[in-house]
Length: 183
Image (cartoon, rainbow, N blue to C red):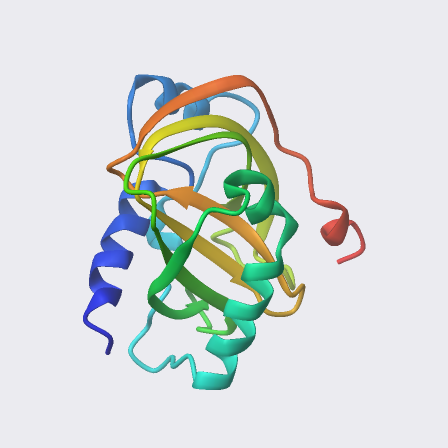
């Protein structure tokens, strides 16, 4: 296993799929009508799952061209650090990939609409998560954790690592993305 994967998983676990825990974020997570599932519901690297080189190359290509990432970081330079398969928790069905993006700017500020997910622990639908947008400002961002859905061929979640400082924006929308409407 890539030595960077445990660090990325620790970061992803600390994110609880949204952002680092602080008083403002706790209000976002605990607020009605939706509760965010614990990060343990997203098992990004089970022992038997492997992200092969072609899957990684596809994920990197699609992530680089994704409009959500471009809206958040513009033309900022980054390199792909840790990566691995993103799977369902129960059946270990591969959803796509997670990528850790290491930003060239060592202390970036990102303000905007962040694609996010709420994972469905029941896993009783073909897509085991609901997409929503979180309006956040993150400062001191050095890395981003990206979840890429291979079927949709797009990013479904971008989150700063715990070192970033988060300020909630004026709104948050928790509605299914248009891609999921017909799922």
